Image (cartoon, rainbow, N blue to C red):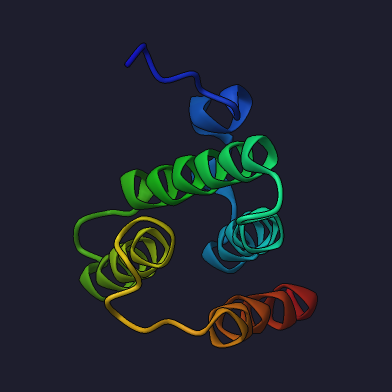
Length: 113
């Protein structure tokens, strides 16, 4: 396995951390949606969207102050559920529609900003 290629270089350089969490989650939700769309349909497109989602999750997690324990826990659980659905045999019995309803809530929040 080679070095991880950063797909969102500009965001990784600090821009992402400056975005409101709701906007970050909405963007993560877009990649989650793409991953769901391409899963078992187009391996290459799935892999790209899956990796982008993980990168955005990780940027959000890294950018949160450790004092934000509730938000940090929420982000880590969302990432874990995402990974479990695609790689872990779906032991959490995640429903794709329910997963997307979770992320769609953030789109509504962003519209209010």
